[in-house]
Amino acid sequence: MELKHAILGLLSIRPMSGYDLGRAFAGTVAHFWHADRSQIYRTLDRLSASGAITTEVIPQDGKPDRKVHSLTDAGHRELLDWLSSPVEADRPKEPFLARLFFAAPIGRDGVGQLLDERERQMTEALTELDSITIDADDLAGRLRAATLRNGLLHTKAELEWLRETRRLLEIDESPRDAEA
Image 1: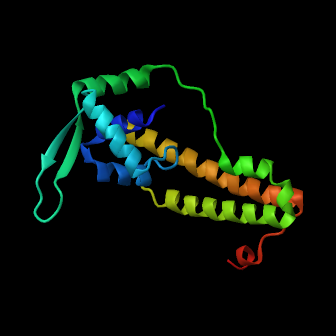
Image 2 (image 1 turned 90 degrees about the horizontal axis):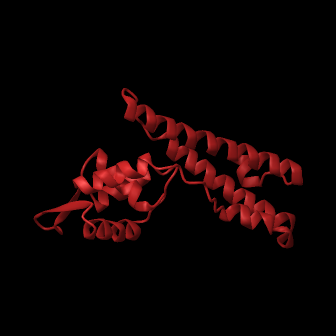
């Protein structure tokens, strides 16, 4: 999957500005895809150049013009072609696991700090995912709810795995985590 596919998918739901797309990435698909604003705008430029989207410029008083992007027929076909193609194999990149794999030189205290930081990140992620609401009254909504459930289950599983890893390594929770 490429970022363009996620953007085409979001634009198939409704026309959006680059800002709206950034909010959509943070608030609806964050459990399976991340994109920062600069990546979004670069990809929008490429999608526009390829004819996959059109852009309507809406003048605003006292603010920069609003650029609202919509799928073209070509963009819709590209999205459908991608959706109908064979599923790509996952090629995971897990920076935290890479650090943990090589963390022996920083000792038990350093490993404990890594585990503390990751647990904090996962707890924040769980809070964010719990705040997402999806109306699951049609096929599209049920599919979106299913992907959200996947994100919730993975995050909860990682939190449990972090606790197991602490027990395995005989690393107690940090005092600040135990008080929280």
